[in-house]
Length: 398
Ligand SMILES: *Cc1c(COP(=O)(O)O)cnc(C)c1O
Image (cartoon, rainbow, N blue to C red; front, side):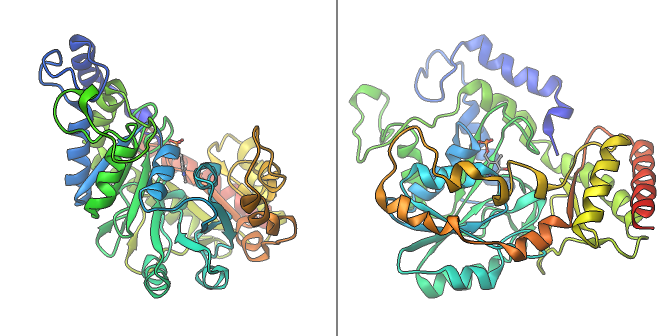
């Protein structure tokens, strides 16, 4: 998945444009910048590539998820239904707004389980936030129907699935608003950065203002601009945007390489009858950044995971035993360990985590291995890797 593997002259050229003008900020300094508007150009590229009306670049993916919720009006005391298998940033973003993350089970898609979402809806629910983990998506059509029926916003965290599609639409563009991350290990990188995309012009204007202290961006004198509402600073710098500009132009090339490597591994593993691949909802196409599969039980999965590590198959994650991506080890959230007081509504809203169990998710995450697909492998290396993986799995299962 990581775009940093193919970092080179294109990225250097874009960054040098910025260094040569010395304008590191995305707004203003029109005369000094010699025509270079890297952030604006990258936003236009994103709009074109993903066929979406608006893109707003931000300082990180975490900022993007927060902004995507804020511009849709999610705030104090609102509940956001989201999966218990995600990166911690997704619930951090909800908490930052004083809203309540309502974690629910996932299914064999490794994303939101539709019945669990339905059962979690309450009068306080404001949004449903699928997280398209490890390169593939939730059943967005089913989620949209639930949102329409209950007047909820559909907010996609597409940080791990850029370039994937659902019913012909780019992931992130199917719901009301979607977010991407361009951190250092994502499919394309800015070093640090993120974006929200939307077809809703009001949301887009909100994102433009909110991410820059509420500035309305009218005229050329920042000091004279008005502030229709309060905001923060979630701006990206021109240096980061310059890197992203070179990277986004290569996204299709990156996805094609990933697909090739993914397919070699998948075809090899398909020969083992006990290996079952993650379900991709009908009408969806992954971005091939990970190959995800299930083994028969937790014990076998743990053994294969250890054997992979011992025998040099790196980048395969058993998220059941990992601290970052699965609810099982999120003690800091369950015990609400914050540096500052948290509102009583949020504290009460999170009480369910003291007792809630996630058996369905345990069943899938316990048996899942998620293997990162690298861009830098040669075809020969990929085939050799596939052969080793097959041998290891066969010997554990025999
Ligand atoms: C990486 C990631 C984020 C946050 O992105 P950063 O740019 O690292 O802040 C949010 N959600 C998911 C699912 C991610 O994988």
